[in-house]
Length: 91
Image 1 (cartoon, rainbow, N blue to C red):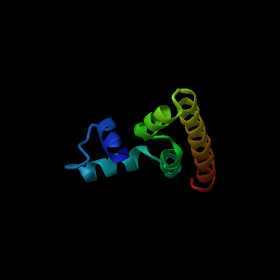
Image 2: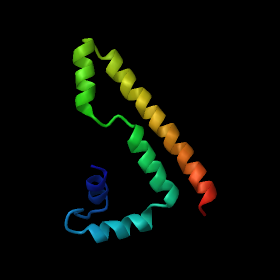
Image 3: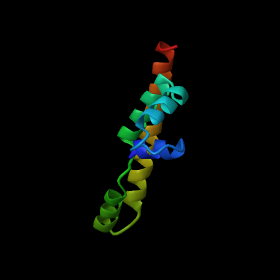
């Protein structure tokens, strides 16, 4: 999913122009930014069907909103920490 999104953001079709996408990412994304992006997507709540199931099982929006918020905050904090740690070691 992230590859297609990055291709769209860069105006490149990731399927047919994979080398162009790689070149654009190498130019725009630092090693610290790449690690932060990977960490964010590892922790972020990306599955809307999971939120829908939690909503259905709990009969309310409290837990899905809490789950989405918590995981987004954890993902952001972890990505921020990773960016700063990697950025400190890689110049």
